[in-house]
Length: 415
Image (tube, rainbow, N blue to C red):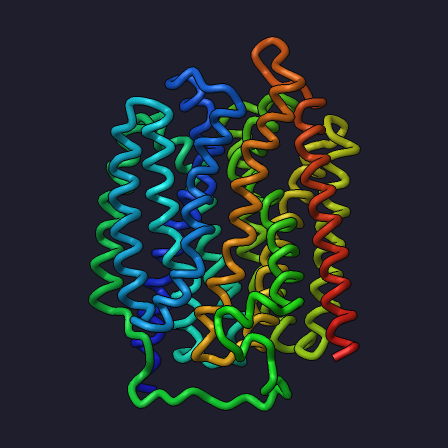
């Protein structure tokens, strides 16, 4: 019982740090109209600036996993959060779009050192049987950051301006760095890794760095992550907000209210699907993963093929399912990876896989912007055809991730 207060304090701090990570990840959606006006930016250039967050995030993930395994998660999280503080401060000062891109890249580099080390901390403090649930809780709090990055952030920007808002954000981030250093501990006192009888003593992820890169499991999972992660964050973090204003005529606060429903889907649906992953579908995780990705494909089909005919209730349902299925997918993916990874190599394995979805986002944001620019604006707004081009690419990518998830099932049956 003496460990309960400490582990819950650690969970609260990790949730708060990941809250800030997710806030920055999707804040560009609300910022988009202000940045386009301030820097006279095109859709493609704004997409490039927004994607600057994801390149350093993705490319630093393998090193983050190795550093977390070698030096401990506490040091990595603290240092990364401090880098995020510097990036937020510089973003508020940005005189040009290029400067803003550099500051956002710095924010992305700082955010990169949170998720993998956080899960590495939560595993010994809460145990392997609660791993998917802890993952879902972390993701839920992250999406609270997405909620704050929508309507509340839009309101706050209207009150103080987008530049001063980032100075406030920088101050809060510096406080999180201090709390991380003071209170996070990598392991409970006297902790010894539990030996799980999973039948995977010869797992490909129980090998060296180079050997992991040679395994089919690694490349299938990386491709699945890439094709799945790109569309979601491209919609939630960039084009969903202007899509609702341009196509449906919502004002800024109405659009941000609808985008916020995606985060509610993660928060409410994520823990439920995480519980089902750990309990009901513990032996059929890969089949459950395919079913959830299939639901996401159907969801996006509604956006692409029904478009302007969708009503407000339909949009709310689509956005809620979008968030819920995202949470379920991530919980399942990381639960499968954990089963394939011994504790001492979990950070390395996750660090090698985690770049994939963010490389997907970094690729999709400017590419979808390019597809929209090809159609162009009509009367100062993009028509539905522009968004349909972009979202068709996203739907095709999600369909690819569904096929890859089926390959995971076949690989498991053959094993």
